[in-house]
Length: 150
Image (cartoon, rainbow, N blue to C red; front, top):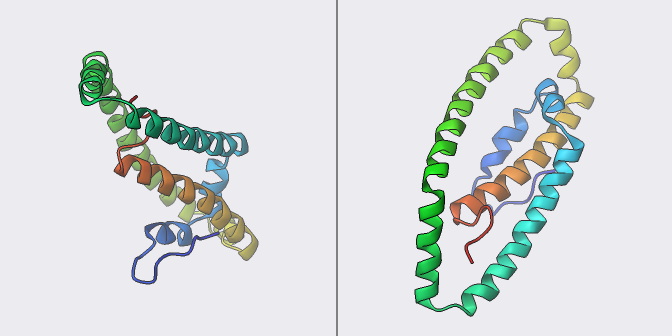
């Protein structure tokens, strides 16, 4: 399921969905995890509502003190997490490239997983992931991903 997009704007996730293949989508699909993502995004919504209420009622000095405390207690941890995630990103990208080569080498299997019914399921799984990723990217772009500062 692809969401509609303003006619002058390209949906960057459409390319991802078109390229969806059954083996990788089947491997990535996790029903409970999808439910968790939905629940997580609901929590994001609730946090934004709470953040709005807090920001409307907080003075500048308190906001500055809260921001300074956050940096003091979290800067080192954030640096470590960024290093770890960057390392995982490289490993995943390398393995995806290797797995794509291995998959292309088996013609019979490729014929099965590129059939219409398998492609349809793969596109639906990719749509679930794309919607979650788009929402996550939107929240990150807006600096809102995770629990908002109070």
